[in-house]
Image (cartoon, rainbow, N blue to C red):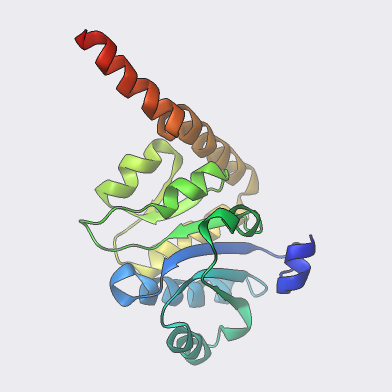
Length: 189
């Protein structure tokens, strides 16, 4: 609660988080366009942005879109200090549009039990499995609809978040991966 108060985040209002590079090729433009659509449906929604560079550019873009009062830019946050910031949100967004890049932020979202909306890319599907909500690639409208769905269906969002957390621990954690690698070596002996 202290962190939320310090950052002027109202925990009684809907909260969405996104972390990563603020670049067009990373899906930032599409994400902010989706945020505008969301604000039209949920006036008091808050978007928490952990990322860089181009903060000034995207603050201006948010002003142009009329959503500046809904967006909180936190800039760069040290990786080890991320969990309390991620805990401020109800829903996470992974707006990456590149078909060939990984998406490490999703692992963090899953570890925190955050229901996640990602664009329908093979990488996102591989990481999230059945625990994610997938929007049409590069489609702000569909992305917004998926996010609004999670915000309006809190119980289903909570279940997806818990499933994501369970998947992260059971299949994607260092321990789980280490055990799989160890088993490969043991079967080769």
